[in-house]
Image (cartoon, rainbow, N blue to C red; front, side):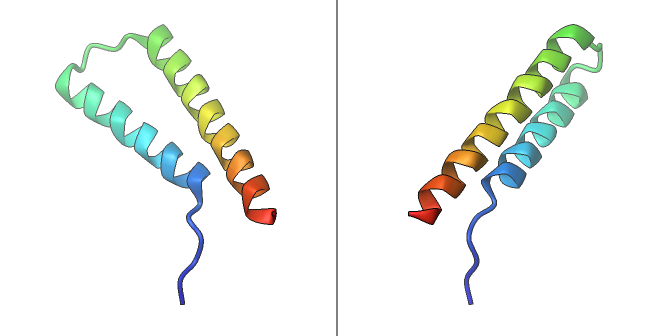
Length: 58
């Protein structure tokens, strides 16, 4: 049995993996930019999740 993709969780996970890799490559923190990337990235993931749910209901 297959289940539907949870786009919010997938994109949020990829965002956190990307942030983790960024800090492994360059450990010097740039807190303001990373906070903005995190906020807008989670916002984008939420938007995609809402759109996917709306399309699925049709």
